[in-house]
Amino acid sequence: MRTGMLVLTSVVQANQVLYAAGNQESAPAVILYTTSYGRALDAAWLQDLTERIQLFRQDPDPQDPDSKEIQRLLVDEHSRFKVTLSAGMTSGAPVVMQVVTLVPDSLPDGCIPLHRLIPAIVDRDGNLWDLKPSAYR
Picture 1 (cartoon, rainbow, N blue to C red):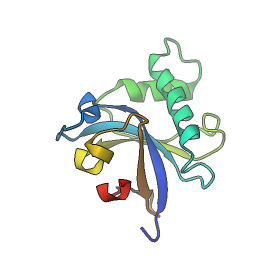
Picture 2 (cartoon, rainbow, N blue to C red):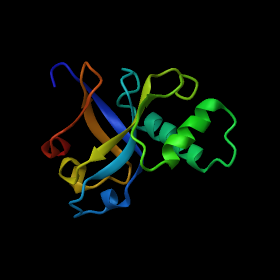
Picture 3 (cartoon, one colour):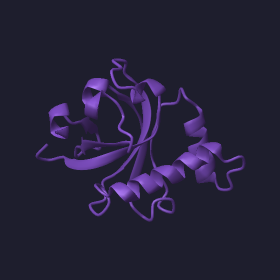
């Protein structure tokens, strides 16, 4: 934690069991986060970006290659990926979108919160680390 960076991750999509309090089943989720100092803890900005990314899944005719690729990744529920979104989509901030496995014991109150934001630590190598549940209190 001394060398890592505190960030907010935002859930783009996740297995439904992760939204249920009392669930004990781990499951995959697609999350976004940035290591931009001006945006890493900016909840409103991250939620807005997440909503825009979610729209790509439903777009019947994505126009640009980046949108098509994001749609392909989100529609394929068996895909595993870690990609950096294009600067045009993120107002220039470096944003990572990746599939992670969420463990209920590591989530605030054991499930994905309504606001879909989960704090985490990114280490120097770009690895994402969960916080202990006691950090949420």
